[in-house]
Length: 354
Image 1: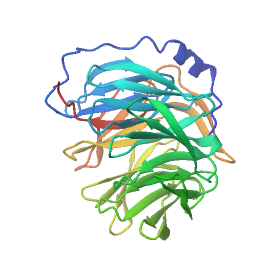
Image 2: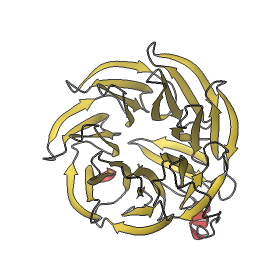
Image 3: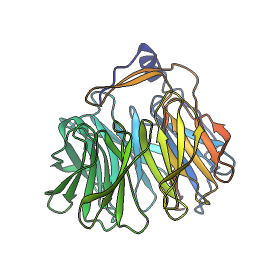
Image 4: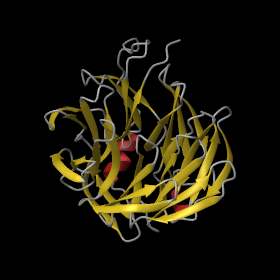
């Protein structure tokens, strides 16, 4: 996707160094969970207490931190940078809470989706407009190869739980690339629907759910046969999907002006409720105790998707719709956390201690 940014966004970038500084000793070193929120229009990363909903600290990152993944040892976070030219990857030392490196990806631009292999050896990023997955050696933070996806506008990337396979959602070509991780060879190109982007593995590791935002459908891929076995309607500009309660519930964000979290009964494929949150809902995460869902919002005064998956945005220069906290029992908004402009990608971090 391509951004056409307003002057407001340029202003936000210019002042992004003015970030909040919290109590650096307030993060529990014994593994109590912390919610990480990347504020992509403030160029910052916030550390949030997922029980009290208080911001512990906010630190600067590289430009436009668009997606986030945490290494298996819980010590580092990798964040993509998508705003043109989008040729950097931010590496954050989570334990010491500071940006430690920006990897220059050179000719590989518009870096978007990120996933880290379960074995902790590599991080993978989409260079979407060029239809490539960029592989990073985590031990050296160097690019080791660029893997063709054979799809158009490869937006998100995931690594299978067994470390063997890469999956990318290709928005413009409306398919999912299935790639052998070791060889980089394409195994299959699975047609799912127009706008294929967000994905999630089922808990049993048998299925991959895919959001097709243009078609307003969800496709379910049987990973054993690399084929779609079911497709059903889900109205909205559906962006991300997150399973909870042992796959009984799916949480889906809708990037509409009204910004909704769609709560879906998975076994029956039945919509339970749509919860109004901030404008352009996008990122979603669930607290470790499953009591709360967190929904990030784009903070766009105006947004639309043009032909070919191009996004045209007019962004806010001040104020934020924030991260909406959903009470999963009552299915209502319980609180709003103001972390910065454009809170979107989130992850639960378990501090490893020293």
